[in-house]
Length: 346
Image 1 (cartoon, rainbow, N blue to C red):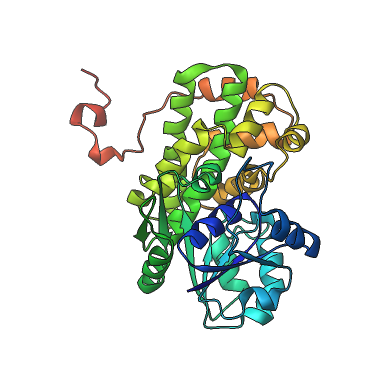
Image 2 (image 1 turned 90 degrees about the vertical axis):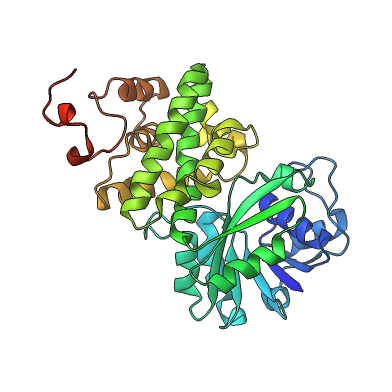
């Protein structure tokens, strides 16, 4: 079994290390010749994984053709802003008839495409899947128990990716709802920014619980209107990923949110985190999707105001807390008890 892993960031290298330990032959494509040589020599990313050394069997290259030659599975793991450009770079050497799985989360701002939709557009004639869930790279790379979802419209593809990645410490479920899996993984990053802002403001556990709960409500509202399944958003790639991203200091989005809550600007927070903060790139796209599908997303709206309109995090929370009174769930009138339908309270 041969796998080509496109991208050498923390998540990509955690997966490469996991596959190599399963005796999969792994070739990692790095964005520069210098980075490929460094990884081949040092076999570590100390900033992300202190003290962790990658298996000696992993090969590193900057040559696109060499990276994918003979690969049974191609894994795209570059940061979401670079997915399209990288896919275009690999178009000729990948060709058609290949199995490709995307492990990056995000929505493209100008097209509103998910990552799998980008790959399907740029690399037609291939079978596309997505792998997503509550999976911090820092825990995967040292072999802590992890669960994830392999999604594809093609059942054989979803099950193939499952068989490649599954182990006794890395449990993989399958799903036909690739749209729901990707939307859950992308939109939770925006909610995690809000959760981090609340932490930065010192607003406590009650506020965090509310943001997580109302956050999955917003994600589900939009995703279902776009054609996703409700049960997907209540699963690992929806609620599960949202919980871990809002709660863990491994989360770049939560850390950026904390800094925003403490008064940093978006640029200052991004520089201090030192990595791509996916939620910032998905926030505008999420708001555009909300308007396109007429789905009110008040938390995501306020996150956009903090990021792009110089609204303070404190003011954003105040705006959420003082909204018009609402029912908790989106219940149609016919489903209400009779006394609620008539407006007579008892």
